[in-house]
Image 1: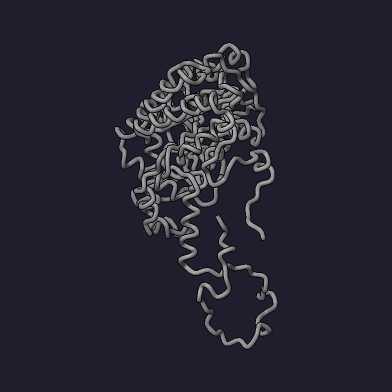
Image 2: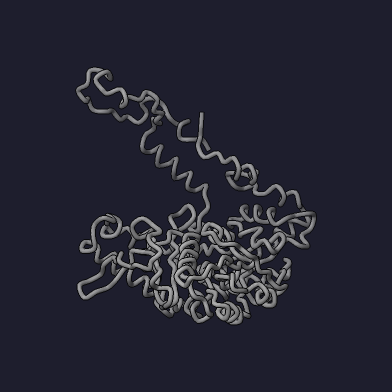
Amino acid sequence: MSVIFEKSKPGKNGFRIPDNGLKDMAELPEDLVNDGIDLVDVNEVDVARHYTALSKMNFGVDCGMYPLGSCTMKYNPKINERMAALEGFSRLHPFSGDSLSQGALKLMYELSVSLSEITGMAAFSLSPAAGAHGELTAVMIIKKYFADRGEQRRVILIPDSAHGTNPASVAMCGFEVKEVPSTKEGDVDISVLEQMTDENVAAMMLTSPNTLGLFDRNITVIADILHRNGALFYGDGANLNAVMGVAKIRDMGFDLMHINLHKTFSTPHGGGGPGSGPIGVAPDLVKYLPVPVVRKSADGYFLDDACPASIGRVHSFYGNFLVFVKAYTYIRMLGAEGIRNACEHAVLNANYLLAGLKKAFNLPIDRTCMHEFVLNDEGMPNGVTTNDIAKRLLDYGFHAPTIYFPLIVHGSIMIEPTETENREMLDRFIEIMISIKKEAGENPEMVKSAPVQTPVKRVDAVLAARKPVLKWEK
């Protein structure tokens, strides 16, 4: 497909700049004159058709299934967008002040209350702008908590199955990272954890369920080991979609957590919009939450900065507000029963796919999964790899799953269908995955050269990551 500049011809758009009364450019200040502006000369029809055609070359959740494990790429209901587009929200300036922002403040307050009810945490801050930002904010709270107690704990424990942002957030806050191994069954190795947990351990960060798509069967034992040592237990809430409405994170023994609104609560993310990573805490940690805090009084809602024990601000203004609107809409539309149903269907869909695929693909840990599960490429014929399988899926109209993560499974293929896919789509996915394995045996070069049906064929992933080409040049 040609680029828009190649469709440009002088005079094609028919637009003329009105006479500004200037005889020549000499009457303009030199710093305002630029002869090098390279604007395209095309008409409105050309522009509309060009960018519509470009949009059809892309793949998104509105086009088909997006089974990215750990990313929870569920369909985003359009009612969310309509609510976020209401002028009272979309045109609200962050400097408007409390008296002119009562609707927005009420929404944020009620969203925080809803998140507390879903997780069991005492209070939430909506300030963090993404999941990793929520992690960092939580580690800052952990640091201040122990500083106030006069303790110099320097270690935070991380399971070997953790998201990569966990150790990064810990290191950025000045703590030492120590890795805790998993057992062959995918649980934290309790015997090793007990040996590692000493007076220098401030906390442990754990995703629940974990990135293998499994619920750790020793979750309360882990919490007890940490708490007996005086350490805190942090929950990475990236996989909240698997437990919301069924179990509360606080009841599992966690002291603080973050939630990915842009995952669990159906707001666009990645290229589709900003994220949001609210952080929830147990009662003893509420005073450390970032400011400002949304409060409710007899006179209405207001932002409170007078919190002397707070870690301070972590975001300009109060976070990514329109993400709050979308998540709030999703929660209110579903209600308590709907939230539970969404969770149960996410887990059911994942186990349905697992049952349909494990006869054809290797399942490293054969357990009932939660909302996602991990296969790998062990046993694939003719040297076909996980990467080849992912590329071939694109030819059949599916986005590739998450691949090569978690790192503790060699050649991992991490699949999460979410609750928004129906049985027909799940059956189609199973059918295509099995057909790809058959192709690997009968026509391996077809799989190894995939994708062949997409506008862009297989790229050099290493080169694309290290030397990305982000603009067109003549």
